[in-house]
Each structure stands twice: as C-alpha cells, then as structure tokens.
Amino acid sequence: MMPTPQYDAGQARLADIFGPHGTEAVANVADVAPELARQITEHAYGDTYARETLNLRDRSLATIAGLTALGYPQQQLASHIRGGLNVGLGREEVIETITHMALYAGFPAAVNAALTAKQVFNDLDAQTQEAS
Image (tube, rainbow, N blue to C red; front, side, top):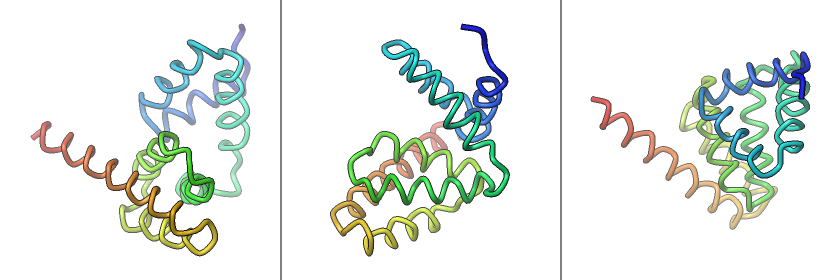
C-alpha cells in the first residue's frame, strides 16, 4: 500500500497525541486487520482528528466522554486518557469528565471509566518513580 496524504497526516497526529504508543497500537491492529489499521490511521486521525474546529485537548475530552458512555472499551479509554494527558488535560479534568458522564451513561459506565483512569494514573506514577 502506498501511503496517502491522509495516512501520513494520521501517523503524525497519532504521534502528537500518543507518542510512540499510538503507532505501536495501530501496528498491533495491522498484524491481524491491516485494512482496519489503515482506516483508523487515515480516517480517524488523518481526517477527523486533523480538523481545526476543535483542538486536540478538546477532542480528547470528547473522546473520553464518548468512550465512557459506551461503557465497555476500557483498553481504548485507557489509551485516550493517556493521550489526553499528553495533550494538556489534567487528571482532575479527566475525572470530572467521567463523573459528568454518570448523568448520561449511568453510574456503572462511569465507575468502570474511573477505575480505568485510576489504573492509568497509577501506571504513570510508577513509570515516573522508576525513571527517577
């Protein structure tokens, strides 16, 4: 497959949000579903995330809210919490977004999301302690 401008833009946007973990996650999907990985890169990140109306920080809040509302994609939620922290969200904003979603998605979905956030925060704290 020849990379398209959207694919290249998607790769860059993935790196902006997730650092090396973004391209690693998509490469992991490509191992089993290369077309899905291409669509994620081109359409989700090369097209939608490249739009200028919302900045990456605001898109991260919306994504965390949406994934919380779905109630089940904990792995993707964890990735997007990390990405949101990378683009300027604070932990309190992540938790407040999840708490707010309890009104619309229900308490079980919000509790699951809060526990996912807790694990992300703990993992990041452990990485920081190991690095120092």
